[in-house]
Amino acid sequence: MYGSLIRKDIKSELRRPQFVLGVIFFQFCLLFLFFLFQDGDLDSRWWANLFWVNLLIAAMSLVLKNFSQESADEYAYYYQLTDPITIYIAKASYNLMLLLFAAAINFILFQLLFEPKSVNHPRFMVLLFTGVLGMSLSLTLVAFMAGFARNASVMIYILVLPIIIPMFLLLIRSTMDAVDDIYINWLGDLTLVIGIDVLMLAAGIGLFPYLWRR
Image (cartoon, rainbow, N blue to C red; front, side, top):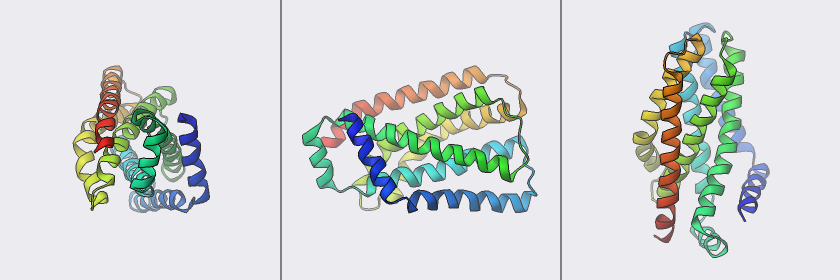
């Protein structure tokens, strides 16, 4: 059932790819504006901040859309087929794949539009994966909590900020170190990000069945 839920989301996305393409186009437009004003040159602080903020905007749009396009009747049908934890893991896994794709596009655009940075790729990729994993876990839970609210698009921005900001501070600092190729406390930051991922996974597994029954 886990694989069937992921395949269903993938097929649904492939039938209507215009939203994902629209988010990618928005990423490009935002970065192109910075390219015009910065003349293609960004220092490590700007590079790290802009990279994660641009990715966060894309992630919130993609994840919220993934939940808003399904009705309460569909969720009730899923509840009869499998357990809530399987649905949460399947949704989080699909969102992880979607956000990894958005992160790859984001990184390619940065390398094309701005002066290429000699980022330590193995460490940066590990950091990128753990950060995107935390975003997918937290946004999946928050999007479901806000999905049945009247103003879901507003609720998700309010609920996600207290969760995302601490993780983003670590990710931005570690990304700056990766761009400058100076790793003062990289392992410590990575451990904290992984800890946040574990906490979000535990919160999702613990809260999702309760929220589902509500």
